[in-house]
Every structure is written in C-alpha cells, then in structure tokens.
Length: 231
Ligand SMILES: Nc1ncnc2c1ncn2[C@@H]1O[C@H](COP(=O)(O)OP(=O)(O)O)[C@@H](O)[C@H]1O
Ligand SMILES: [Mg+2]
Image 1 (cartoon, rainbow, N blue to C red):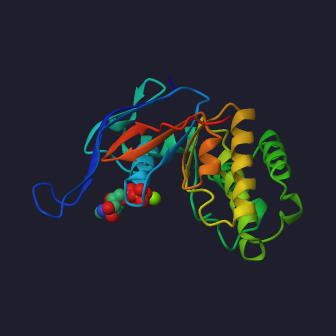
Image 2: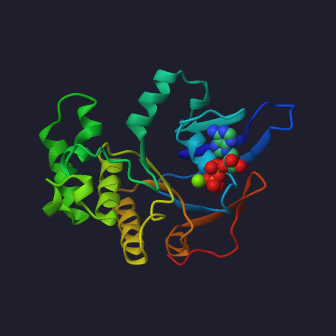
Image 3: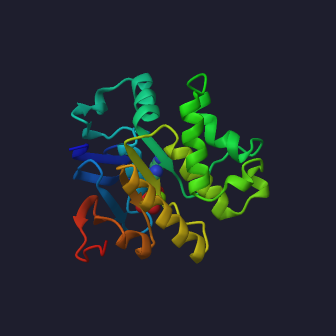
C-alpha cells in the first residue's frame, strides 16, 4: 500500500456558522504502488481540495494521510516540504513555468533547489525532454512555446525528482483535443515505464478510461465509478 486516506474530512469557513462548507466528509481511499487512478466529479465537488490533502499542500480537519506507512498529517511544515520534494510530482491545469527561464532551466529548477545537479540527473532530464518530444525547444522560454509544449515541460518537471507519486489536477484541461490526447498518453506511458503511482483529476473521459480505476467524488466521498477502464 503506497497511500491510505483514512476518514479525511475537510471544510472551509468557520465551523458552526452558515459560512462553513463541508467539502470532504470521512473520505477513504487506498492506492497501491504503481496504481493509476482517475478522480472525476463536477466542478466544486472538492477534487482539488482532495489533491491538496494528498499532496500535503493543506491539512485535513480530521483524518489521516498515510504514505508508505507514515502518517504525514502529524508532520511539521518543514517535514511536509521535504516530503513533497522527495516523493511527489505535481502537474496542474496551468503549467506554472517560470516565464524568465528556458524550458531546460524550468525542468532543472526542482533539482537546483537541492544543490548541484549530477550527471545522472542531467541525463535523466535529457531522456525525459527527448521522450516527450520537446528537445528542439529546450532553449525557448514559455512565451515562445505552445500550450502543449508548456504542459509537456510541466510533466517533465514533475518527474525530474523521480517521485513515487504523481498528482495531476486537470492536466489536459487547458489543451485542445489533440494535445490533450497526446499529453494523456505521455502521462500514462511514463508512469507505466517508471512504475509510478498516478492520481489524476480529469474531465477527460479519454484520460480517465486509460487508468486502472475511476472514482467519482460525490457528497464528500469517493465512489467507485461503474464503468471499468479499458486499459
Ligand atoms: N481555500 C478555500 N477557501 C474557501 N473555500 C474553498 C477553498 N478552496 C475551495 N473552496 C470551496 O470548496 C469547494 C470545493 O472546491 P474544489 O476543491 O476547488 O473543487 P473542484 O476542484 O472539484 O472544482 C468549492 O465550493 C470551493 O468554493
Ligand atoms: Mg479543481
């Protein structure tokens, strides 16, 4: 078991007042190593909130997030930051690349934050950049790249630390149909090859169908979606 969510509840606003809104309600989830799951659900159902809990970007009001047997809900801010850097890779709907840096610099940025970059790490970066088909663009800045190229750069950046778990929040949401399909295939292919665990929130049934399991977030809980994936 790589990840376990135990009775996670999360709400916003002040408890006991009308402003309080319960978003996640005693939610449970178990994910094995290498498993790939999709989370679907209408806008506002709490998908991003859920990823924020898993990614330790925010803490639940109650419940536990257990990663590789460790309860991370008790970690300090610093421990959480280390945990994210070591074990997680994030892909968002918008790429969040640094506009002043080239594609290549953006990809290496998470490694630079940890100090000197080794030859192995550079080779890994080169492998990934070539693999996703953006090697020719490596000296370009985000403004000089297409949306698809920026998003592929964001995928490489998420993988650069060889994380165990990739969290993707509507990764194809800002792309046109062709680019969305290409990016979905890349995400799946890379996570299969590297035996990564992948949790993706998506509106794309194309992407959702390619995953091992599909969950619907409804009324603050995850329901196993009836339609089995075809992969
Ligand atoms: N930081 C926040 N403060 C207050 N309310 C929030 C915050 N983040 C999300 N919400 C609310 O929680 C609900 C779920 O939001 P979100 O997790 O972003 O849903 P989804 O990603 O499924 O669209 C929404 O009603 C949203 O307005
Ligand atoms: Mg969202």
